[in-house]
Length: 302
Image 1 (tube, one colour):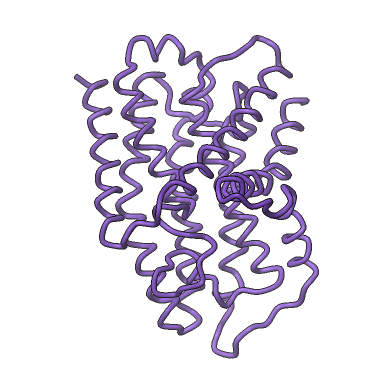
Image 2 (image 1 turned 180 degrees about the vertical axis):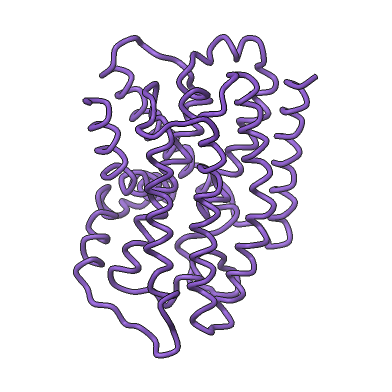
């Protein structure tokens, strides 16, 4: 029961903190003091207190898009084990549901963007659909590798078993997988070098251009859903990279939280030392991630 409460507590409250750590890291690299660490919480609170401005051309698809997206990520957060503790929801084959919950949320966002009738938002929706088609194979290859190594089709079975011995036996495969998953982590969360969440130039935007017409609580759902998606995919990544356990429940939870914060710092560092890629370069990098994950799959199936 305690593990369930901690799981829900972290899922609901920690995601905006990761965005604050990333922003703070980028500010330090730029020599600025930057916004407060808790600024994302203040922004969300302000948005949920505001009213909404809705275009006359939009329908219920536009209003339901952010809500559906947030709901899908919330369900996905219940399927992923945090640290060394089993997920609240777990069953054989839940890895397929996990992957397609993100696809459903993306589909809802794309529909909401197209419903506005804006050419800019339609352009962003087309880019999002194209790049997601290139990113999804990498995630499924990763799930195949983990299923093979763990002998389980459940995320809890894959990620809660001791992976330290697996690293010793199949380290090359997992190393390729870690590199591919880090690329997908940046791409799925619209981070540099794939996208810039702070840009305001529509011609170069991917995700942000799809939510230009969102406002008030709907925009709050979009931002919180994006932070939660970063949290969930980071938890998935961290469990593969740091498969260790201390044997003490509270220490394991603390190690998980510290690992997430260090990953947020790493993401902020990457965004500080790299520039955003040209749109023509993005498919090449995503295909490269797919090749890495396919090699990882071949190594464990040989």
